[in-house]
Length: 255
Ligand code: NAP
Image (cartoon, rainbow, N blue to C red; front, side, top):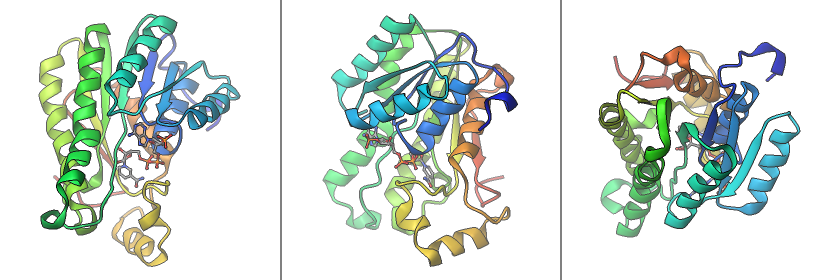
């Protein structure tokens, strides 16, 4: 994305994006940074954090990198503490981390997998916000990253889809609980060719089926998701809270 072509809606703002060293999270961090935010990127591996920091800095973005596995309480707290130590405040939190460890149908999903899905895809988002909430000021904004599969969980990732459905409810509940100072919204991406979705998007037949079912006739890009997230996090969306924006090329979701 060219620096010269985009607005600067996040000048003076501080944004934390979880799971942001590649894929959708990285593009969100990049977009917020190019629009003027100081961004805090994180993921499980130090090497990935270092590479993401280097790449964003090379684009002129003010960035801090912190290792944070979202289901590790100490690392979540450290993410908030390091952000406050360096930048003194938090304006935007994008909760983007997720796991999809199994393709089993729901009735054959092991209890340990059910626990992992709940823990990473839902519970960690709640716990991160519990740590962050005391530091969120008037005008702050939270964005959850759900999925098109929240609306009609597909067979090969049904329980994952259900955890993404839970994020739609979490968005509504927290929008109410955190109002009026903090807005809470959600982005539901369609299929985006990242490492996470490679098992589908790198399969030619599966990819073609998705493209054929998508009115805009293509997969999404990480930049598509970043643009929608930046809109919801920005003051352009200052009268929007509790909403989910589906960014899926017209794939069926809901009325
Ligand atoms: P991705 O390209 O595979 O990137 C995943 C990122 O998350 C990496 O930076 C990874 O770095 C980090 N990560 C993984 N597990 C983590 C954890 N437990 N704690 C912290 N960081 C973690 O994935 P993506 O496709 O961008 O997916 C991002 C989000 O979009 C997810 O919520 C996913 O459900 C959602 N989504 C994706 C698609 C799609 O088609 N791609 C569609 C709908 C929704 P490390 O390995 O260093 O931890």
